[in-house]
Length: 165
Image (tube, rainbow, N blue to C red):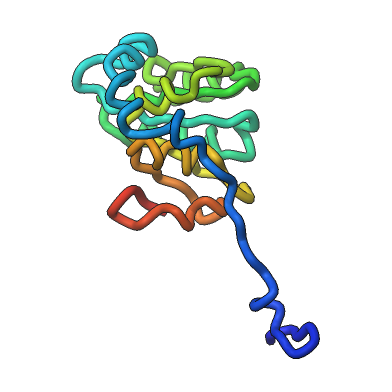
């Protein structure tokens, strides 16, 4: 049922304006320039596939489920986590599942362009996110994204082209 406001439907009155991404800071050229050094800095070795995860709310953004999924992936997959929350409970879960050596918690990262440069895929399995800036920042740098349907930024992910929803 379409609601009407005067003679126009509500749909015609709404404009969605996504958050802007600083493309001078987040772009493919920066990624190429920083990639080798960033991978070395974050301990990602040759042949490893680095999955990136960035959030200040690990629970809401699905980190526990991502750690559970990591055990299903081949050993060459490593999870790099950026964020300011206390990782103790998540480390304990990783130990229980036997994947703790495949996860690196970076804490709060000031230079996110280094983080995106180091990872091969950004994962964003959020349970709720009106608009995850991490998605558009990663895509701007040429990093494919795997995200849930529960984030507004999913509209920027083209299935099989630059990621998967």
